[in-house]
Length: 543
DNA sequence: CGTTGCGGGCTAT
DNA sequence: ATAGCCCGCAACG
Ligand SMILES: [Zn+2]
Ligand SMILES: [Zn+2]
Image (cartoon, rainbow, N blue to C red):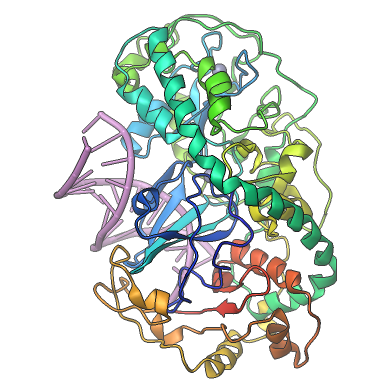
């Protein structure tokens, strides 16, 4: 699900804007928002208030009191990429707490018949870095913005994870039943947001057609300002691509009776053996023998129904207990955790390094399945990346990114998102300052002043187009001075005209693409964005 | 115990 | 300046 192409509010704002249009419509909470999106929730939305997400997001310090930033921790997977009997893959929820997360790593795979160990598959969905979520509160709404497209499967639902944790050590099936029931019950709430998804997905396709036409323009726009470090990391994604052909080799395995994180049995799996020693990160990747995600069910685990049937059942939760994560237990296993493994894992826990460049320009989908590919993209999955809970969330990452087109399609909303930032245009051509001045002059009405207020405090101004005011400042800088609001450019054309000195075309979609790419891959350009379709532009630069 | 948020501080670009 | 990230602290459940 990700975000809908158009949020109720036509996202003509950016989380960093000092002034944002007043929002009248709110979006239903999207637990699995993916791709670049901006959503506005009601201030009383509990989930929004908690800044929760289906993705395992951890707080990260962005030195900005007004905006809460979180980055994705990826997903906890089996080092052997085993497939559960039902065809699902292991994808547990990484603990948010660093300490707890470390404990998780190296634990035996929950699949009883698998000898693999749990390891973190870091998120590299945003230019090689973890996808980030931004939250900002205003008086009447909670603004949410995401950057990047998760290149990994969805972790288990938060509720499931919690349930597991709290379920006592009850070791039997009973616990499992409870979990399943919970999951099933929880799943229903997401249906709401989904309808729009398909719709947007379709529109996304349409938009894609415009891409070629607009490419030139986009390049031009991007040339306005090229961030020094662009994301061009397509490579990572490619590396995770899996061979579709390989399918569920391990599917039929039975489960051992060992706890998910504490398997003690010595059951050996043929394939896996050494795999667990390698970190999941692409740079280190060892080729999993078979496609890890290929089989991800189309419906993500997030789906209630699915969960009950597929996801949870696969795990042996009976043994899961609070002590699952006890470090000591790791050593109790017949096969001690390999120190190296753990070590490596930690270092790779979160992708830090950018990746290598990919063939950005190629629009081809890489299906070459290298041994190291983690993901096998299934086109069907790729096309729909919706946040609705059911979608094949797991696919979002992987496959889509390989091609610009694909990405665009995939990204939720149909908004083209170029994670890869394959377009390395030069922004230099147009001085950024120029843009600012233009926009700024035209939007005299906006108040640029920056007042500071913790994001938790509602930022009235934000909603009303007023500057931040209140409280804390951004840690070290204020946005106000440089804030530029492009709101006046209601049309994409207007925007173009500014640069081109002429009005070019009416194709709003183009802008979207541009926006997407810019936002996603070019850090500096994140402020430049358009409403996803014909809405006004909101370009902001601040510093 | 784990989650969530805060914020200092370091690093790379 | 921007962004990513580590780390400790604290409130909370
Ligand atoms: Zn396994
Ligand atoms: Zn992610």
